[in-house]
Structure formats: structure tokens, C-alpha cells
Image (cartoon, rainbow, N blue to C red):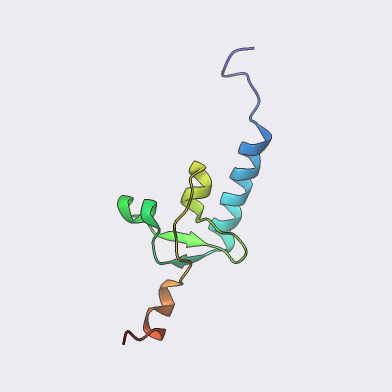
Length: 77
């Protein structure tokens, strides 16, 4: 079987489904390191510890999970 003919791994399929779910139901958060470095918006979803971009690439995510619309809720002392 050639490389092109090989079926996708179960892990890759799971990662793609999770990515699509976060893209559909997630919310924009303060960017993680990967998203900030690429200038991308960062989307996370309740109950998932990685953003959509990190899930898609199989990377560790260092995102805060703080929604972008929550910026005004925090006051620095």
C-alpha cells in the first residue's frame, strides 16, 4: 500500500473531529503562544484544554482560556 493509499489513523480522525467541534462551538480567547506568533485568532471550548489551532496541529497549548470579551472584567491593581 502506498503512502497515499494508507488510511488515516484513528487519532488523526479524532483530532480533526475535535478541531471542527471547537471551530463550530468555541469562543475567541486571548491568544496562546502559537496563535499569537502566527497572528491567528485563538478559539477554545469549555471542557477542552487546547485551542483549535493546537488541536489541529497536535501541539501543546499554553492558552489562558480567557474570553476576548472578558478583557474589561479584570482590573489590574
